Amino acid sequence: MLTIGEFSRLTHLSVRTLRRYHDAGLLEPATVDDTTGYRYYSPDQIPAAQVVHRLRELDVPLPDVQRILRSPDPSTRAGLVSDHLQRLESELDRTRAAVVSLRRLLQPERTPLDVELREVPATTVAAVEDDVAHDNVLDWYAGAMAELDAVVGERTGAPGGLYDNSLFEEGHGHVLLYRPTDLPRRVGRVHPVTLPAVELAVVTHVGEHHDIDVTYGRLGAWVVANTLAVAGPVRETYLVGPRDTPHPSAWRTEIGWPVFRVTSR
Image (cartoon, rainbow, N blue to C red; front, side):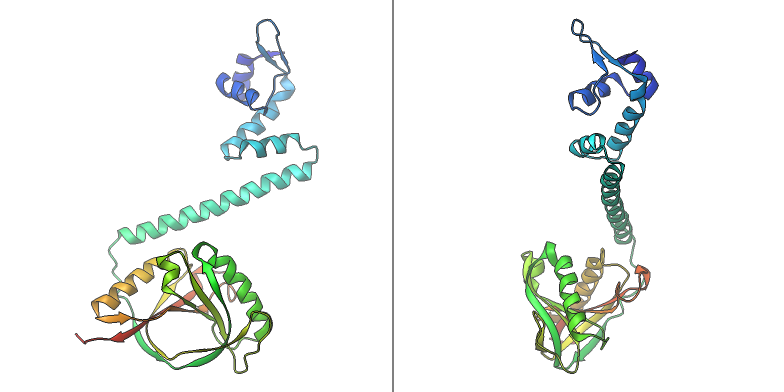
């Protein structure tokens, strides 16, 4: 048997950490002296201690560590670890994206914004629409686009969306996702909608959507600087996206800000 100090040196885990693992039920000593309360460990417990340490380094929650250690099925243990690793990778991706966006914001913008004033005629499309919470937009978008693809079938032009101002201002608002088609059908949530004619200030956002707010901000500043008044929901057109290519650097999203010219400078 090994004293807790000897076990600490062999595993590179502090005595305090070993006691904490014991109290949490993660790594119980092989035996505890009833008189002194001293903890003793078996050499066979060294790998288990190292596994617990690695899991905690990966910020695996204590209940998940307990489930992993107590599961007799190797595939179940592997699945639990894999799920957590996927969550960590997603968080890492979000962190990297935030760093890239922050660096972009902190650097002077050298590239002038290429804004086009575009008159868009009234258009009848196949659409799915609903009132959606801002935090749920991505999940709602995935389901709505799947329905539109199933009903419309072959590609008939770039899909798009209309987003009410309240979605951004209040965190909940009306969203309409559409696909162009000559003969829109009514199937399930999909139904024909005629989008009204509108004049848009249009700019193209390049890449993923994690920093699309930066492009929104630059476009909004351009709108104000050019004395263009805003009227109606913002329109997005997905020229190239995940449905077209897995390479985010190739994605292109047009942002259309409804405007009318008040004066000209």
